[in-house]
Image 1 (cartoon, rainbow, N blue to C red):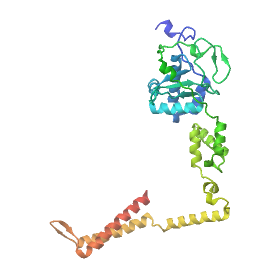
Image 2 (image 1 turned 45 degrees about the horizontal axis):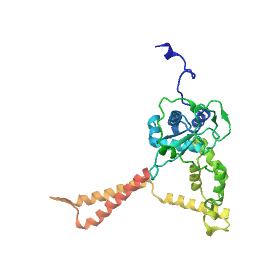
Image 3 (image 1 turned 30 degrees about the vertical axis):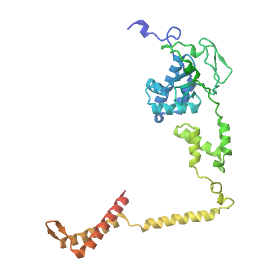
Image 4 (image 1 turned 90 degrees about the vertical axis):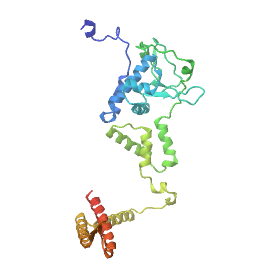
Length: 320
C-alpha cells in the first residue's frame, strides 16, 4: 500500500469535507438511543450535512426520497426523524410547490445551530466569506459552506430559486404554553404541572418532549369534574361520600367474582352434562342415515349440547 494511502488525513490538502456541529451531534445522541433508532438519526443528519456541503450553503433543496437513498434509512423513518430534528431546533424547511399548480416540489432545508432561530430572509452566504451564526450577529472567520463539493452543484432554474419561500417564525415554547393556559379546552388543567410530568416521563423513556406529544398527554389526563361538565359547576364533592362510593363498587365487583363458579366446578358440571348426553345416545338406534335420537329425547339432547358449549367456553375463559 502506498505511503499516501496510509498517512493521516490533512484538512489543508485533503477533502472536500462535510461539516457538522459537535453540539448538534451530542443532542442527537441524547435525544435518541438504541430503542429509538440512534444509528438511523445519525445517518440522516450526516446526509443532510453532505447535501448542504454539495450545495455550498446552509440552505439546500432535496427530495426526502433522495435523503432516504443516501442515508440508507427508509422513507417513512426519514420523515419521522426530520420532524424530530425540526422540533429540536436543529433543522427547518419550507415545503415548495410547482409554480402555477398545487403539486408539491422538493422542500428547501436549512441546518440550524444550537440555540438559534431561523431568520427566513437569511440569504445563502457566498463561499469564502465570513459565515454568520444563524439567529445571531456573531461572525465566524471560516464559513463551513466554503468547502468544495465532490459533486458539481447543478444549475438551478429560476423556478427552483423562486420556490424557496420564506418560512413564518413559529411561536416560542413560552408563548405556546401561554396559549394553552388560555384555551377553553384545558380550563381547570394545571398546564405547568402536566408539562413537568411529561418532560420527566420523556427523560425516563428517552423520548422527545414535543408539542404534539404534550397535546396528546393533555388529552389523556382526567379533566376536573366541574370544568369537564358545565352541569357540575358549583357542586361540592364530599371526599368521604366519594370514598364510600368507590368502596361500595369494589365490594360489588368482589362479590360478583365470588359468585362466579371456579374452573373446577365448571369441569364437574361439564362431566355431568357429558354423562347425560351419553345416556341419551345409548338409547338411540342406528340406521342407514346414522344415529337417530328418540323423539322424546330430542329436546333434552339439544339443550344438553348447548349447555356443553357454554360450559366449555366458560372453562376456556377461566383458564386464560
